[in-house]
Image (cartoon, rainbow, N blue to C red):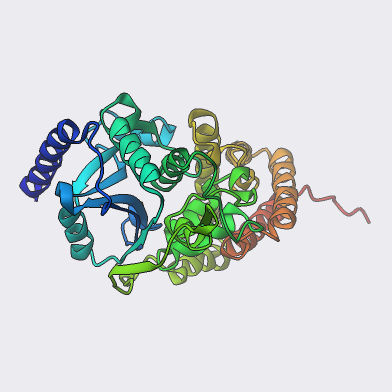
Length: 378
């Protein structure tokens, strides 16, 4: 498998080097076609949302290549830390079209093509801008989940080449980014839960920017340029129905089973372990909010549920300080009430609700166990 990956990478590198030298100042023929490719959803985390690329085909110049803005290098030192921090460098890379389409055929992911019937001078500008980017340091960019990704970069370079903000989002601008993202995780329950609770207030803003491949596809179909449709029609190059693999554990049932066990066990140790897990998650959220450059992770109100202060509650419980254990239990019950009210109109309310209820049961039990009893004098 490693040899196959190496050979593909080597082929892409050789293609890139040869194409850069060949394409500098190359005039496209009148038969040249430029199109946007939208690739279907996959079952790997990086492919949940699909993909966007640009195809340039010019039979007279023997060109049929795809510009891909979604490349990254797993061999980057401290890859995971850089990705988490938000300073991982993505870059544009070149593929031959047959190589590109073969990859998606092997992955059984659909590919749709939208040709841009723009004037010849605009095609040439776009082709030149793509090659200039490819041959310069501008080919690298710092990935941002909403603001700078494979789709937004395609939108930016096309708009630049058309000398204006031609492509803008059409439709679904009155719902939040969180609401737009939520359905993409269907069939991957714990990914859906994890992204629901790690994202902060930024994803609760109205989704006015194009940041997902199928948003761009749908917007292109409704966009005009020089009083003509920017896309004549959408062609299907590959068609596959997305298949989500079944999992005995990655589903809502294991989630509800675990939470039900915590509620029904009515055990001090189980309660403490549950609260400890929540506090560790909350501490991680706070750390990521300060550490990461991803704006989506900042201002995370989900810490009202996953509160780092639960560690203080547990500390008071360990040292048997009933008064302060009780007070922190009541404080976190208030946090839960505020959190539930704030969350009620959010896309992830229902998926988090069982955890809110479980936390309520656990905190009430902790409060009852530690409430100071007033002696009755007869």
